[in-house]
Length: 429
Ligand code: HEC
Ligand code: HEC
Ligand code: HEC
Image (cartoon, rainbow, N blue to C red; front, top):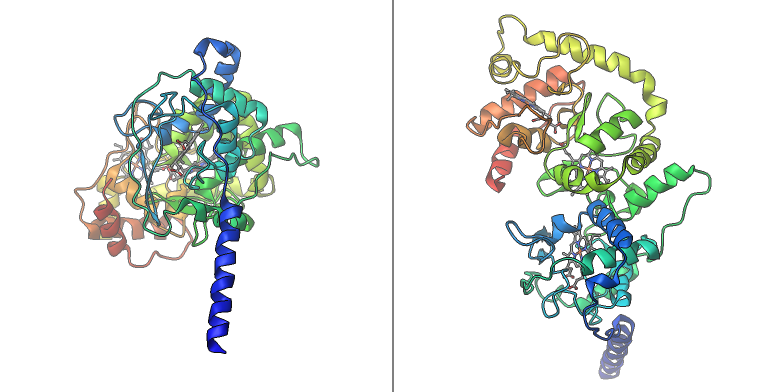
């Protein structure tokens, strides 16, 4: 009896395995001779260049010090390191032999030319929303880049997760293929913003929390998430800054990387602005701002701005004159000379810490990052620089953070700060 059940179970498993293999199987798409660059219209290539910028293709597909788009950039995931691939039109090591159909399938379905399933470290779960026309433009741009010989690097994803066919299971659970569908109740500008944000610019890849299997939680879209030892703050009504992210501040931040109330785009947000969104025309930046100002409900919070500014400016006066508290003395000596906005309106060149999300987030990571390593001249506002304070002890950085949290916000104190500083320092810049 037991034997019969066992045999039955084994047979079922075998059928399941065969069934899954059939389900997971994708055909290879035949190789082509690399198309001549002259076969693509210049205006199509130009459109592709804008989209490649907006999709940060070069940020992910270029290794440090490597040739553009030649791959080899390591992405550390909780499942091991995955390297981006060479997407230059080299015949042997790049995508030179990929037809437009093969490229389209990769962008829309996350399947390589040879039929292998791609890992979602490649954000095809967003690129699936791209219109066919935009994929055609991206193809034209990629196929007209200089071909670079650069063989793929070996991923360190452990067995059995490295079995690409298993990705079909992931897709079944978490991937919804399909082009962007406009929301008819919203304006054309809002929908343009949504198309960019949810598709090519995949803002949610960093700002939306993920489940244990690495898929974005769609019911928590843009609710904020940890990424590369930083926190991508919520882009919803849950954003912790006391100054609402309205359209004007979003436009300034996404266009220039600096908002007069909120500070600068540092860490992983810096290349998003300076290498990516910079390619988009102003109209598209406005569309993104319209979309996010709606999502975060800025209009309903407009009346909170004036009191928030008042409180922020008042907090600056705490550090004028002699200080008794040692933490306050630390702040006055190290920070107050630059971060002083006593004159009324916050000055965009010295972010007001009471309004800055780094000080207001539930997690102190971004504040610690900025204090340890500063903001590079390339990432910050032009002509000024935020120096790093890595020479400070963990205890002093913890003290400073506790002091700022207590005097600049009405939020609860951060626990275990000293340990957190040590951990972030250990991860390196
Ligand atoms: C967040 C990082 C990231 C971004 C942004 C990104 N890619 Fe990738 N891409 C990857 C990774 C990682 C892989 C390899 C996935 C794998 O090995 O399964 C990949 C694979 C690909 C592939 C399949 C290539 C092959 O050899 O199998 C194509 C095509 C591609 N990307 C095109 C693009 C384009 C076009 C853009 C910009 C619109 C882009 N990628 C943006 C990370 C990224
Ligand atoms: C590669 C990851 C990544 C991507 C992609 C990304 N962001 Fe960010 N974003 C971050 C991080 C990290 C921060 C925090 C930066 C800081 O504190 O200086 C941030 C900060 C922001 C802020 C400031 C929030 C605050 O409260 O201070 C806004 C607004 C923002 N991002 C919007 C966007 C939009 C819009 C997109 C898509 C067009 C986008 N981000 C794509 C990682 C990312
Ligand atoms: C020499 C002037 C200077 C000093 C000293 C200084 N800062 Fe800054 N800080 C800046 C500037 C300028 C910026 C805006 C970023 C940029 O443009 O470089 C900034 C930005 C910041 C931000 C916002 C980062 C963001 O992502 O928006 C925080 C938080 C911050 N500083 C905290 C501190 C703390 C805490 C100290 C003391 C330990 C300090 N700063 C000392 C000049 C300074």
